[in-house]
Length: 194
Image: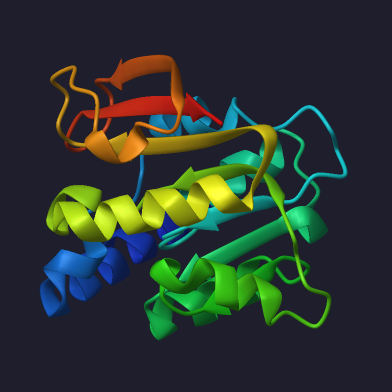
């Protein structure tokens, strides 16, 4: 228990430091809460052989929830832009495919893996999409749509808790939307299906 508390404090400190260096890319001042991480993890694909792509895993709060929910670690592919956080993730999740890179290049990054990954069953995103221009977000949504298998899901959270459909999700069907109040700050989890 004490180890978990120390790890949580260290993660929060690291996260805050990285946010101070680049607030647009980090997007939050603290890691996702256990409630938010669990709300995102519940949308894993049913097929245990499916790959899951996590975008912007940070210190791994959502990553840990995905594995706790039953995702095999070798089926997790995570793209983290921040090299310091990617290094931390590689230490914690040794069998996962942790890629240091830009999520907007996800198609090239997945093709460039030792064993290319042609499609995924779900995309779990913690990217701060509100920090980017609409055109950039639309381009990312198109790449997510292309990499998802049939009936694949895109799970995205935002701190904009008002109910509004993002234009970038027009090619998707909204499956669910839920506000997680026990997070700093409160967040909305939206689930879109291809």
